[in-house]
Image (cartoon, rainbow over all chains, first blue to last red; front, side, top):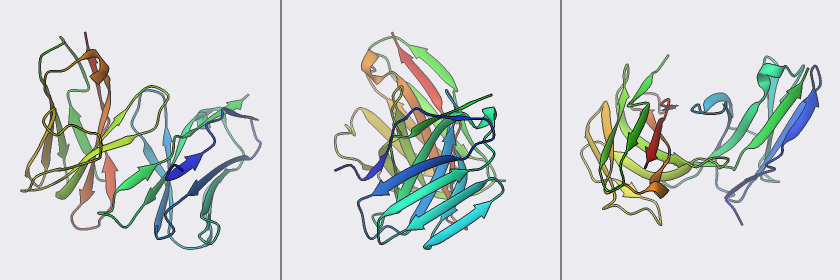
Length: 111
Length: 115
């Protein structure tokens, strides 16, 4: 089992819709969870971090964490074509604070 | 905000040569830097963790004699790909952890092509 799993997609949504991205992780002791956005040929950029169960909202983005289910998600409201990118879920474990990445979900927002 | 730079951004080298990639934290001190590699359509794979003034810790399957990492100061880490081969062609990304805040910031990446 991979440490961090995501659906690779591609996930296609129309402009203005809600995009829902999901991620599961295997290390129950993980404490920190992150969503990164990566455009083709570029380095990842941090969108959201979440550390406790529940929802965390930042503008059009909402991260949700459920530690009991070992599940973290990212919702993007009012999706825009500029949101088209690969979204990487990352989990920080207890071993030296390493960030472990999922394989990423490719999101395409159609005008 | 915190900035991490990498140099060069792109490099093409011949098979058998060595290439050095620099990673610098520009406005913060980084006791720990991480080196990742990303192949096309794949995720970031952690190669090694480097701590200032000590030897790097390599992930399983990463050859420490091929990927030499030096973290000589609180703002600079280098990755040297020795005797490069075409299969080493990849996108190499460093990340630096702020000594004060523990936040982790990514560099812009280095595209290595070995011909």
